[in-house]
Image (cartoon, rainbow over all chains, first blue to last red; front, side):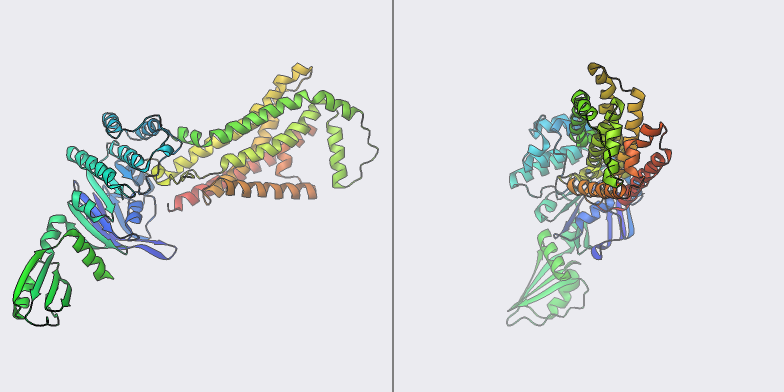
Length: 294
Length: 252
């Protein structure tokens, strides 16, 4: 559905995206995780033809994102919510719904009416007079009802209070459950991605440092904790899957991205008094990955 | 819907100058009688041969008839100034990113940047033409009320001359708006350029944009300033194409 290869984007010598490789399968809910300034928004802009790549390839639906005609076709088949939820302040809710619907032949008027009721969006209110939360719900309505095959959401809950965030995410999840959709969601909120995504890429400084299904990541990443009688020995493992090894007093903690097995034999050879293999949360994977990159 | 959006963005910048100019045009017609009395009582022996002297002589000579009064006061002064301001105002403000930063929503629509630009340019030029034409047509319409006549054809020709040059300043502001997304900067720069051109033309007594805009050639010789009109069209087209090239390359 989305494919990037060696994608680079410079802004006046500042590298926002530095050789990004992504493959978003059709039907997935793909979370793009990264710190602020990691290149998530720039990637989305390139995919939707809002920014031109410096080099590399970006394709959506198999169409080249930087080719103007193909880009129009990509946008015809894509729903988008920007981080700032920028809409037309001078229009009323009804006007902007009507305006947006005119661009999309497969516009879902039935859904629009339902979401307008569900989100309690006042049709005659100017968009500029809406609260941040209501504006986010309107932006989501305008994206969901396009009859799109792909939803691109850039920090969809940014700036929202937890209650509204949850409402927006629930609406998104229930919408996706009933439609044949691919969702590409960028966020720096790990819990949000963990809650709804089935695929994840962690982006740091313009590069994807981890990518895969969430289940696969959870299977692959392990924390191996070794406790020794005395001080833990200096860690030195041959296995290439060690993300990080940290020695603290009698405890040696190893984070592996290739499961526990390749490390356990080496670990046991150090003769610890106990060996524990623990699962790693997405938050820990994120923090360990980003820390490693530092 | 592109037209609708462009209309929403520009309607007040169009309707307010249009209304002001319409009132102004009608007002000029009704002011003719007292002004004519004043002019008939003025006899100038000499005004010198400098720029100022020539300007005074031209003003006095032109306004000894009703047609001359209308040409001088309306087409040469008010419409020229207000038409330039109105056109620059309509050309100002980014098409793709509004003052509240609505760029990404616009860009997420399945319409090319060129389509957005072309729609806004076409609407803005139409509005500039209406600003030149509609108040000018009020003059032949209202003139019989004071027992005078002004030819509709002359009003249209003068309005076309005014529009042709106003389009240059519209296009300049339009081009500047691809760099500065707000309204004030493109407007002020375009008007600054207009003032400099006006000062150079009048100071050096050169035939230029504002002479074409005033319809001076048509008023004095009944012939159209084709070279000026075509040059203005070419300058406008170049500026609009330049705007298209900049926006096509731009990253949002």
